[in-house]
Every structure is written in C-alpha cells, then in structure tokens.
Length: 354
Image 1: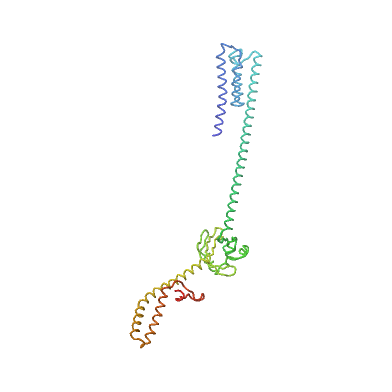
Image 2: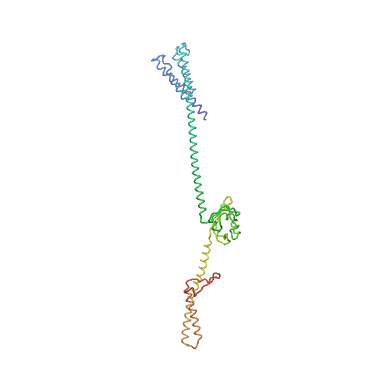
C-alpha cells in the first residue's frame, strides 16, 4: 500500500510537469500575434523551475525536454518542424537544455539538503524529547525513591515506637526482627538477646505454639489469642497474640501484655463473688430477724412473769439477743475483709459492719 501511494505521487508529479509545459505552450501561442517568434524561452523557465521544485530532478528534466521540443517545433524556423537550420537557434536550445538541467539539479540538491536538514531536525527533536523523557523519568524515579524512603522511615518509626511488641520470625521459631517494646515485654536486656533466642522459649508451654501453628496457613490471620508466656526471669505472663503467616513462610505478629488486665479481671471476679456472699448474708439476716424478734419478745415476757425462778430463761434470752446483735451486724455489712491472702476469702461480720 505504501509503494502504491509513492508510485501514484511520482506519477502526479510527472503529469504536473507535462501540464505546466502545455499551459506555457498555450499561453505563448496565444501571444504569437503580438510577439511573433520573439521571447520564445521566457515562458518555459517557470514550468521547469516549478516542476523541479515540486517534483524533483526527474519532473524538472522532463519539463526541460518538453519545453525544448515545443520551442523547436512552434517558434524556431522552420516552424512546425523539429528541424533547426540556424546554428544560433541550435545553441539557444542547447543552452536552454543546460540551464533547465542545471536548475533542476540545483533544486533537487536544495530539496535534498532541505530533507536532510528536516531529518536532522526531527532526529534532534527526538533526541531532545528522549532527554526530556529521560529527565522526567529520572525526576519521577527520584520522587518515587524519596516516597519509598519516607514510607520506609515512617514504617520504621511506627515499628520502633509502637507500644505493642512487634516481631517477625521463621516458622521454626528463629527470630528475625522485633521492636524495643517486644524486648521490654519479655524483660530482656537488648534486642540482640531476644533475636538470639528461639520463639519456642517464650512460651510457658511450648506445645501451645505448635497447636496454633498447626492451624495457621499462608495469608491466614489468628487474632485475639490469649497465651501464657514467660519473661526472661521465668515469671509467667499473659499475652494477647495476633499473628499471620506471609506467602514466604514468615510469621509476623503483635504481642500485648495483658497480665495486669487478667489480674484485675480475677480481682473483680473474686470481689463479685464476695459481694454475692455479703448480699446473701444480708438477705439471710433479714429473714432470720423477723422470727428472732418474736422469740426475744416472748422470752422477755416470760422472764418478767417468772422472775428469778427460772435462770435458764434469762440465759436463753441473752443468747437470743446475741444472735439478734449478730443479725443486725449482718444487715449493716459495708465491706469485705480478707482474713489471710493465703486462705480462701472469709467474711468478718464484726469488722465489716463497723
């Protein structure tokens, strides 16, 4: 398709040269009554120059040859013949052919120089565009590198300053990375000391780790898992464990010390149980107090009627009042008293009701 287009363009250029010569012939022939056989060459220089400029060397030479034939046939004696008798006219035709060929050649060389200059300009522009693109690419790359550096620095600061313990390890327990919070959580002196350990040593029961890893798969996350770890000095501790396994087989996770929270929960549970005991005692005291009041009243009435003849009534009345005092104290309980931290919690009614 490209070759056909080029052939069609070349054909149009040669056709244009023929048409230009034909126009010059018609115009010069139209002026024959005015100029006769004079100025025969003047009308044919423009077709030669235009054909050479637009079509190149070939169309320029064609226009020169056709113009020479037309001049010889129409305006050189004997007219309407290609024979030339006058040597001066022969020299004129030869000179015209030489000038036409020279003009066509110069125009062709000028056009070639122009095309070469344009090609150099295009190549230079491409080189400039390439350099600009390279510079833009370098600028973008520098921006990306700066963004990566900033992101890496932000990640490092987040990793280092995080209050939770962050770690990264092999599946077999070999430690790769950890932050300072993780070191403090386990009670070690330095990060190097932690990284020299195997993660299995952090578990109070190493089997717990194996049970968890048996359920872990690449891309899977285990969250809010409570585990029993131990510090560097062997002290047990409760941690909340969040971990995931990467596609490369590494474990990345977060460990949070929840020992204080567990102790607080245990204390709250014990306090709740003791409050339940106190509430039960208060309710029992209320239920005992009503019939006890009747008993005490009847005993007092019986004692006044019997006088000193029945000393057992007085003793029974004193015991009933003692029970009534205990019941009253039970109803006034305001706090829980622990008898001994090594013993189960006990309720001291006398001290609790003061």
